Length: 101
Image 1 (cartoon, one colour):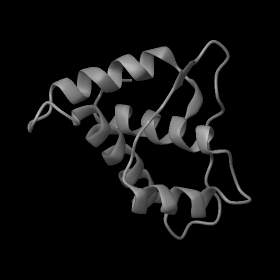
Image 2 (cartoon, rainbow, N blue to C red):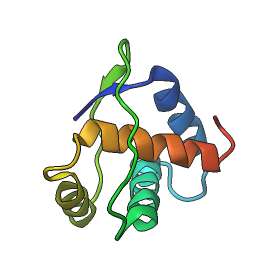
Image 3 (spheres, one colour):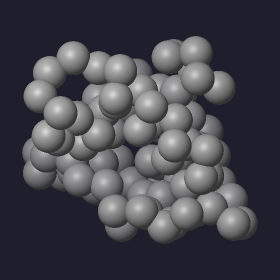
């Protein structure tokens, strides 16, 4: 459950997921999983990672990712960051990599 995710991120993630191959069912979840996984792979082993803050007027959203990936996020965020800031940053970077921001 994430709060502060900019509304335009939610809409752009849906657009990216609609353009991906594979079964339609679960496509959005796979897109969020890819965003989080790519971000974790990118920052693994780094001591300092700059995370974006949540935005006022952002949307509250439930994002489902596989349990092993969620455990990696928990481990990274423990004592360092709020999970909503982590997800906002992961989605921001992912959308930039897809030329959506």
